Length: 121
Image (cartoon, rainbow, N blue to C red; front, side, top):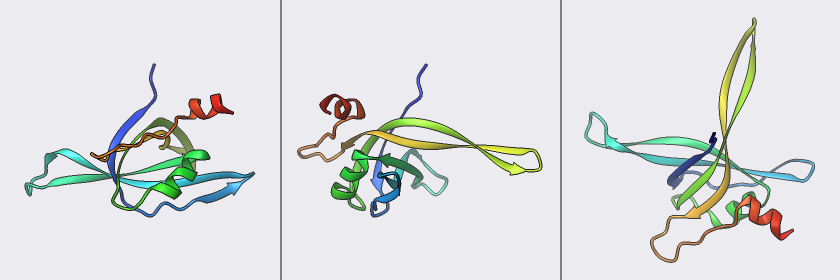
């Protein structure tokens, strides 16, 4: 079984690190992903996805990412169940980035994966 996503798009917000306690850091990115087909107006639409980058990837993102930069992100999908009350529940999905690749045509730079960071420490 597989549980991963792979997207390529443009960064829509300025990445800012947030400290969530216990020394953990996160950056939440909004990525605009162009659809592969035109809409009824003859234009390409974009989907906006929120992706969370944790720990060392958050550091990279806050230093290297700029609004408008193209990036590729691979990661996993984490379902979260929310209690809405009255015995109703909803499930939404978090996208957690685990690997980052710049999509620049000139001199692309690849960042390490979580496994590589664990092997080095």
